Amino acid sequence: MADHESAWEPLGAQAVSVAEAVGRREPCVLRQRAAHWPAVAQWTWERLGALAPDLPVRLVQGNRELGATVFQPSTLGAYLQSLQGPATASEAPLYLKEFNLLGAFPTLRADVRPQELFPPGALHDAQTWIGPAGARTGLHHDYLDNLAVQLVGRKRFYLLRPGAVERLGAVAAKHDRWAALASLNADAVVDRGVVAGDAWVVDLEPGDVLYVPARWWHEVVNHTPSVLLSGFFGTRTTVYAQWAWRQAVQGAHLAGLWRRGHCTCHPARV
Image (tube, rainbow, N blue to C red):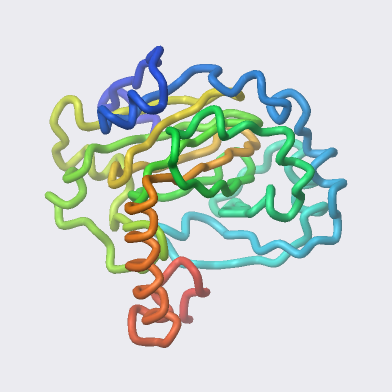
């Protein structure tokens, strides 16, 4: 995306609480808000890989949001070992997405403090994204608010205001359980005409927190090998309503009634 950098406005840090940011319904970066979490100082590839080296994991190959959905099996130890060496040029890096690290290893919960971030009474669920430099999550929007906490490495978010993709008719037909996908990448959307104030970019360092409101489009790329903790959250009413709706859609999908084989959860049909 280097040829398009001038089209993206930097997202500045704000000294506000998460509750204030949620009230504004605008993306907000909270610099070093999680810098004191033990995970930021203590999580290393060696430590994480030693937790259960033989644990099977399913890796995503390349940008499944925009391209074909391709999976590759591995083990946690072998995959994390691969992230420690020199970066290798690859058009389709392998990415451990939506991994329930805290569920698999409850002892790691002591290293994170999400209760400090979420608004009082919010329901939330945390997943990790672990991957090498160049790993990418294609342009999409989530149905719930998200607090993205950078724990290891550096990552870049490209953000587009709700409506930017819809106006181009570029919402993809591809199914994802918890997100809507775009049929274009973020730069292509900007190239086709996004007004000032609708396109933002922000780089996250370890300890930074980014609030991404529901339905804000975003594309994400790793600058370095990275661990991100994403906390999706909302009020009890919002979360239950979204869960019921998405559960119904996913049930239809699994039954073969809705975009079977054209999704992020099953390998692409050959």
